[in-house]
Amino acid sequence: MTCCEGWTTCNGVSLLVLLLLGILLNSFPLVVKLVDKDDKNPISCFEWWFPGIIGAGLMTIPAAAMALAARKRACCNNRVGMFLSSLFNVFTIIGATYCMMVSLQALVVGPLICKPQVNNTVNCEFSFSNFSNIDIDSFNLNWFLKKSCIPSNSSGHTYNNITATGKNWDFETKEGRHKTTHISAFVGLLIVGILQILFALSQMVIGLLGCLCGVSKKRNRYV
Image (cartoon, rainbow, N blue to C red; front, top):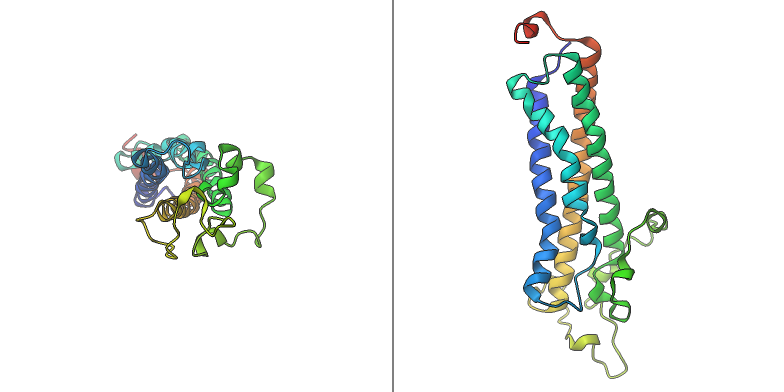
C-alpha cells in the first residue's frame, strides 16, 4: 500500500483554502472596527488572540505545503516524506484546536457592545481556565437571540445612546453590525477549525500507512 497522491493533494488544497478562509474571518472584525473608527468600543478582543491568523493560519502552512508537494511526487515516494506529511499535521490540529477554543469562548461571551458596563479588553481575556468553565447551558447565544443585548437604564434608553431596532441582523445600527460581525466571524472560525482537524486526521492516517507500508517499486523509479 502506498500514499495516494490524489488524496494527499486534496487534503493539501483543502487545508490551503481553510487557511486563507481563517485569515479572512479573523481579519473581518478588525476591518469593521477600522471602518467604524471607534476606539472606545471594539467589537471584542478575541480577534486579537488571532485564532484564524495564527491557529488556523500559520500553524497550518507546513502541513498544507507538504501535502501540496505530493503533486510533484516530492513527499509521496519515500517513507520519510510520508512520516513528515503526518507529523506536520500535528501542528495543524494544535492550531485548529486553539482556533476552536477561542471561537467558542468568544461566542459564549458575545461582543463587547452587549456589556457596556464592562466594555474593556479584560472582559474577553482568553485562557484555558476560562475555557474550562464553559458548559452547555452557557452556550446559548442569548446575546444574539435577544432583540437587544444592550441593558437599558431607568430612562428606558440603551447605553451609549444606541437605539435597538429589534432586528438581530440589522447591519445599519452599531449594535447590529457588532453582533452580526462577531457571530459571523467566530462561527466561521469554529467551522474552519473543525474541518481542519478532519483533514489533518485524514492526512495523518494516509501518511502513517504510507510510512509503515513503504512505496511501490513503480513509485521508486521517480526517486
